[in-house]
Amino acid sequence: MRRTIGIVVELSKVRIAVLSTASVVTGYALAARTLSVDVVAPLAGVFLLACGAGALNQYQERDIDGLMRRTCRRPLPARRVTPRAALAVALALAAAGLACLAAEPRAALLGLVALIWYNGVYTPLKRVTAFAAIPGGVVGAIPPVIGWVAGGGEILDPRIAAVALFFFLWQVPHFWLLLMRFGDDYARTGLPALTTLFDRRQLSRITYVWMLATALSCMLIPVFGVADPWWTTLALVGASLWLGWQATTMVRTQGTMLAFRRINIYALLVMSVLACSGLVG
Image (cartoon, rainbow, N blue to C red; front, side, top):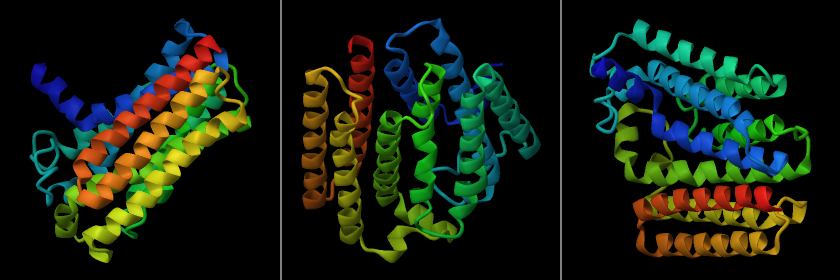
């Protein structure tokens, strides 16, 4: 049983799923202005859906994973699970996630769109273009919107659009910073990768621009009336200036892994500040 659970956890990319799920709380708190047991269903739904999408991604890319040092020990390339069993796990998790979201039809529709976009658009697109991370960023923008509509917000409200834009922009440098560390692995698979188009210094400068764009989008969130208390605006601006400094340091020192960890910390800070703003605003 322990071995089976371990394989499911590995297939599901649980750590990535947890980060996606956390942004649901941000959207819900901003819309509902409180946290109640009603947030459990969208949280569980997005988590299970993200786990299902991650497992399906591993099923789709099992041939590529076997060629990369970073992924060759995953359950499918290591032959610890059969492709049929992995696909069954992926579909079961995704179905369970959609079932949890079914009470709010808009949330369920958004969840389905995220699943289709990640596994039906982004994953195949990685075999076609080195810039797949840009359209792939749409997936990261959807979970906070799911939380927003689950909390009673309108799906076309410009306030949640501003928050979704931030998460969309954040996804791109998040991926490219990781790519700069494992570029040789990607090149080994024959996949188109930015590391084959640009040298390390050029790619760090491109990533730098996207990090600054992410910081700027965060500072613009209060303009849309999302952050009511004055301290929220101050915290968002302060965190974004900190990210800008980290981006500058990354370009100067080529410390990409340090920048990768810090851009993740930055996203968690922004989510926490916005959630607190919704609860006390």
